[in-house]
Image (cartoon, rainbow, N blue to C red; front, side, top):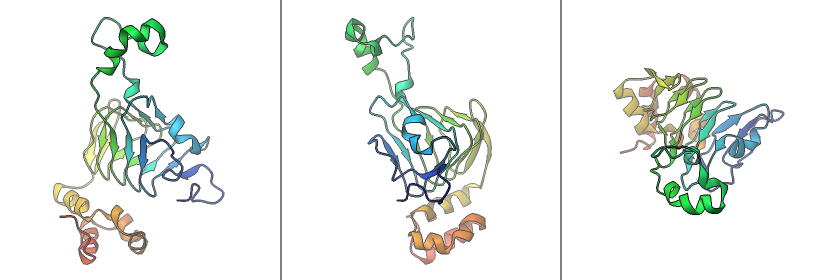
Length: 212
């Protein structure tokens, strides 16, 4: 729950103790790194959060500078001739068009799994779901869902490769090391960083921590 986990490096913040908006939920140890003002994450990096949709980010995620999460408020109406947002300017414009905006379809919450790495200046579009262990390459524009343990890049982001095969991904998701007690994560940090999915699964099984 320390905002600045690295003494002398104000550019790195843990987001969980920093975020105040009820529309943003962040798990333990997820951090943001920005030399300009990392503490302004919820205002500078979560944009257009005007509606009920939430941004949900899991545990142990690494978010590089300039990563932006665009929320559903960024959407403009496209069912008619103009995409101009008359509603936002008040008065008769709002009175005559509010039902159009409130009736627009939404993709819902933006949901990020655990242990996801976002490269420099990645952009995440509204309603996207990103699976555990995914990697979002530098400058990627993510317009669709990203499966667990998949690397994506480009604009729009496309799959570059999967990090593991189906069997190992299932092992890792059942082991869910990000839900282990912090003491156990500390004990096995080296294996989590450099070990195999089978080793992670073995540790989880030994401690009765495998998901059903």
